[in-house]
Image 1 (cartoon, rainbow, N blue to C red):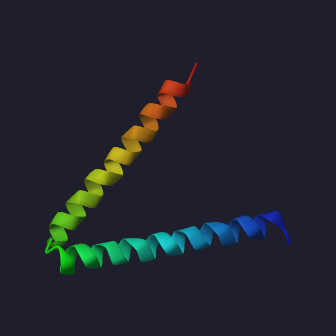
Image 2 (cartoon, helix red, strand yellow):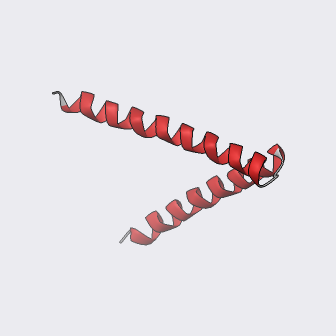
Amino acid sequence: MDPTKYRMRYLLAILVMAVVAAGLLRHFLHVGAGFTRTEIFIGALLAAIGIFLTAVLFRLARRP
């Protein structure tokens, strides 16, 4: 099997599972915990910004 095809399948599987996990998490937060759609959106946005800043800081710290 071509390594490029294998990597593409792996990437697509990760993306599909990420979308499924996000959908399930949003459903359970909305239905089970009672959070509004806006609260979930703000939390996800803050988490994404935090992950981005953490990645940038670690990248800058690794430079010689």
